[in-house]
Image (tube, rainbow, N blue to C red; front, side, top):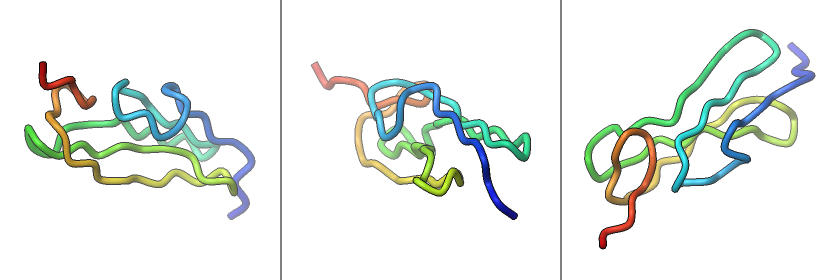
Length: 68
């Protein structure tokens, strides 16, 4: 399948903002905390597919938060 569109509401790999990725095949992926110290961040690849990255941080409501 050729992917023509992928949109990321937080602009890409932005760990501090909870975002949502939407692809042209109507799939939606939301950033979320797998644990209180592990974020699953979704983003768009150059070929317009969705991908995810794990980031260790203090995680709350789908975003990394400052430890202060």
